[in-house]
Length: 201
Image 1 (tube, rainbow, N blue to C red):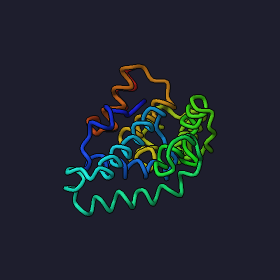
Image 2 (image 1 turned 60 degrees about the vertical axis):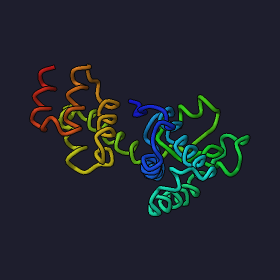
Image 3 (image 1 turned 120 degrees about the horizontal axis):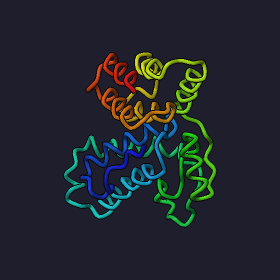
């Protein structure tokens, strides 16, 4: 499931800075999303860069704390973005020129197929997927796999979209079941309601 929602250029700078900081967290844990999402995420930094370079009124009006967070986020990512992917990009635009040294397996595969650039498969997301697949192979019911991931504080349960992505990648779910899992992940369905919905299918 892709989480892209529109062009990066359509967001304001404060929102772009917030999303850039969140992107850094994803990268530190091993980017778990699809390549399309990644390309939107790195474009956020290009939007910020353009505003910084031009000294735009919108950038100048940002709180000093937000400006510091942008630089702190950059600093935290520089040590991760060590794989050169696009050597024709300016060195100053390191977020375009380079990519993270590691990421989730699916992302690594997509990136290599698209750009012939190898990234090491290593992510918290994949570690949880492996545990979920193991539970399925052991005969654990789909509802129990979902509940274990959520209630035991796994990485995939840190936000609804990640939990939904993990459950739908691991389990063979029909459209109606996928809708039920999403409603549960965002808190609209209780655990017992999800169990009832999955048992109905």
